[in-house]
Structures are given as C-alpha cells and as structure tokens.
Image 1 (cartoon, one colour):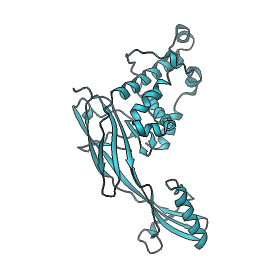
Image 2 (image 1 turned 30 degrees about the vertical axis):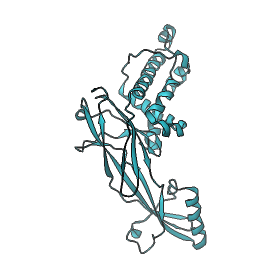
Image 3 (image 1 turned 60 degrees about the vertical axis):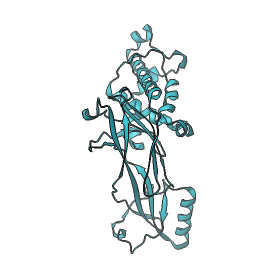
Image 4 (image 1 turned 180 degrees about the vertical axis):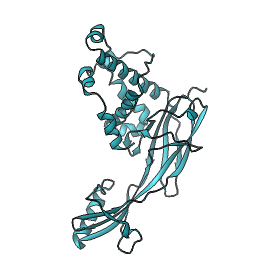
Length: 291
C-alpha cells in the first residue's frame, strides 16, 4: 500500500464520528472476547488507520514485528463503552465506538495468535526478505515482513548515449530524490553545480502491493504500514474464496527493483521510469486454527 491509498482511506473517516466518539479511556476497555462484525468499509478504514499509526512505533515494529506492535497500539485506542445515555442521545457515536472497539479486539486477537516463526529468502542481488509474523485462520490474513537491502543505489552511467535517453520526459521536479540518502543527494547536487547537467540511475528494491497465491490468484491490493518496504499487509477487500478455509496457503511476494532514469540540466528535470517485473518469493502460511 502506498501513502496515497493510506491518505484516501483516512480521509473517508466521518469527522463527525471522530468528534463525537473519540474520548480515549483505555481503562474502560472491554475484556470480552465477543466480536461484533463491523461493516466492510469500516474494517478497511481501521486497518489503514492502524497501519498509519504504527509509524509512530518506529524501531519497536522492527524488533517485534508489526502484528505484536499493533497489539499494544490497539490496547491504547479503545473508546468509551457506550452507555444508555450515549445510545439514546448519540446513536451514531455509540455505533462507531462499538465498531471501533470490536476492530481493536480483532487486532489484539491477531497479534496474540499470530505465528512468530520466521521465514527468509535471499535474492541474487543480496536482498533478503524475512516473513517475521503471519496470521491466517481461514478467513483473515495478516503478513508482517522486513526487507533488508543495501538501500538505493546510484549509477552515473546514464547520458545521451544510453538507450533510454530518448524516452525521457520533463517531470516538473517529481520526487526523484525521495529514496536517496542525504549524502547521495548532495553528491548529485555537487555534480550538477560543477557541470550544469548530470545523468544517473536510481535503483530501489521494494515489494509490490499485490500478493498472490502460488496458482497466480491475486489476493491484493493490500493495506500496509510502510517502514522499510511495507511492514504489514492485510487484504483490502478480504480474501478470495479460493483462499478461504484452507489448511495452508502458499503466498507469493513480488520483490521488485525499481529503476529511475534521471537527467538534470539547469533547473529542469527529465525522467523515465520503466515498468519492472517482480521476483517471486513464496512463503508457506499455516492455518492458525488447523492444529
């Protein structure tokens, strides 16, 4: 999931609900294991919201995996249990609180029952993807991973004699620098200042926001929180029927090396972003309730 999708999901939250309902009272959290099944739209929003909020946990998510971290986060975001006065005077707020709390219960359930067994795969370029946690009960799926790379790589062998040079288009300064370190950016700017023009290729490894089954069934797009790659993935629209009720799932991540061909000349930016195919990496996910 990208930032644009996160923003879209967050913007769909009814502000009147938030104004009416958001009064954090962690001590009022219900310990009931009963789940109230929320509407699909609210579930999607909450997953996206939780994914965005996990950014505040930073290193904690790396140390324990997203699913464990989100458990503690969920505990702190309970809303007051609706009383009779709220149900009568603010029924929409009461319903919102109930749905919100049931979804926090769901995240805690997922965190407490996730499989913490790690699985790793190393690609030819040295990139390692590690599945840190996973949860699958035949109906719901959550995947947490860490993508270890050397960071963005820059090659300065791009110029007018390159086969892609004629494919450049003026990009009005799009965020070509967003994946670069400060040192890399300053090096590029120094070259530009010295000669008035510079060409380079930025190579960044990431994971596509669609995960598939081994038979090619697409179970994305996914919502997720972004740390180094997408740290957690939850199907935005729920699982397809073929992925439900199975004893295990073979899920396939698609690790992609994105390339950006950039030419800076004066104050103008020219770029070309070719479409890339992902390298498939398969992990076996066992149904948590199968045993």
